[in-house]
Length: 96
Image (tube, rainbow, N blue to C red; front, side, top):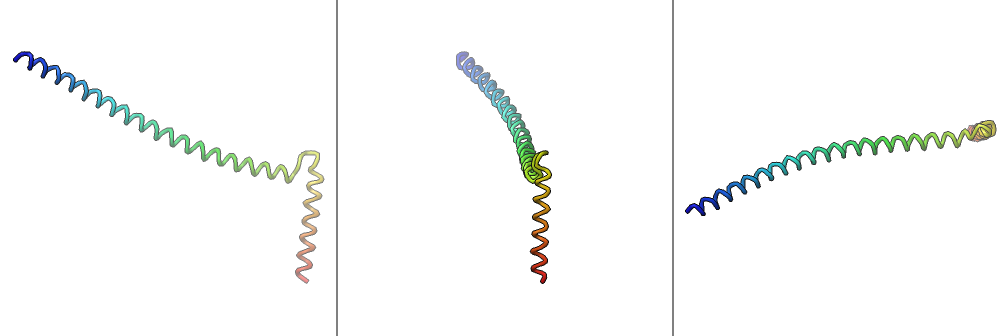
């Protein structure tokens, strides 16, 4: 009879250990899920910032190409003025 009691006590202690491990694993799982959600939020914010910076970079690149470098600014301005005169001429022709 004492052997059965020892086996039962052994099983009870093993079951307690298993429940303790299960509880610890559930806590770890919850903590990891929260950490994953936080990391996902940070990644989303960084992706949005990268997208915004890319848009700004493209805008600056386009503006720089329109203005040209320091040596080409005068030529670029002359081209823009020439285009404006051509557009004004076309508008005048359409108005007549």
